[in-house]
Image 1 (cartoon, rainbow, N blue to C red):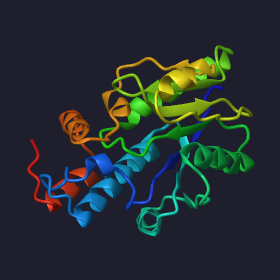
Image 2: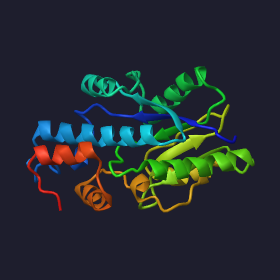
Image 3: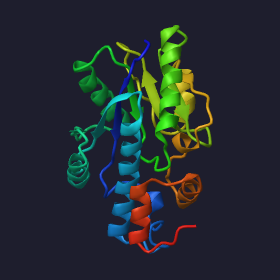
Image 4: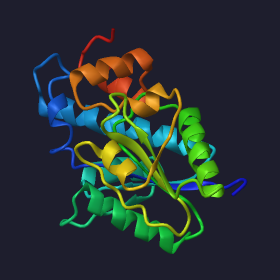
Length: 225
């Protein structure tokens, strides 16, 4: 698998339903809808931008049915796959993996959470290289990166010709490992720092936010620490 690159998908919720625990984080607790939607979209844009800049990623596809997200990402040059209404997150990812595989069954496929505004391309490269190396020697056929608390999952990767079998949700890191996925080990603060709460956002700020998220916070007149 020398020189192998990965097809990566990023699922993005409708802005009206995204990041409910983060409401008010953009405007000092006011919770104005426009400021919240702007922040939720910015988290996704920074995640997508970092993923597209990673050398080990062949292509990035967003999975969403939100018209605003679709319009913005399309303008950014990002391919968007419309999700089906009946899908939950795992259903959307399984569907997306099937679509990606129709155009590249020989590629590893990865799912990346959309709320990683401090992600750096080199972190993603290192994690994907580790996964690909494990696939090459047959150590595992799937691999995952746990979030900072070690409970959730920020990245899930599967080898060529292997089903993704996502198990995102409560305690997904344990669920993925119990299903045979290899835990990826590395000091990747941006890759592990998903943002669900104001506290998470503060920690992401300390790591270093992407441009879109910083701009969204400035527009809401929220002072950065």
